[in-house]
Image 1 (cartoon, rainbow, N blue to C red):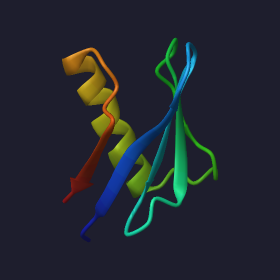
Image 2: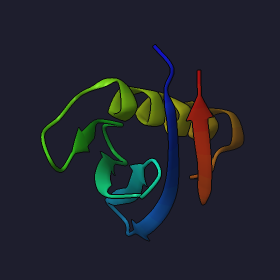
Image 3: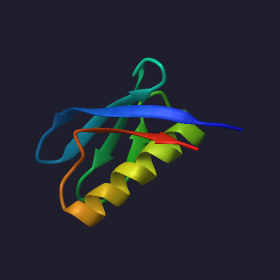
Image 4: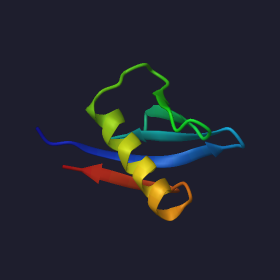
Length: 75
């Protein structure tokens, strides 16, 4: 099964970052709590697209020390 998903930072404050994600439209949202690193899809669907984006964002943050502005995942 192939997967292609894009993401873009839409909001950041002292507690959270929020991303729009999906493909071909960014029609879903992911909120990550900065203190705990927990990521929640706002629609409640913890599927492969959500997991791929969440891992990619967290890995980037861990390696770079900042939240990515945009990106994508394909496999």
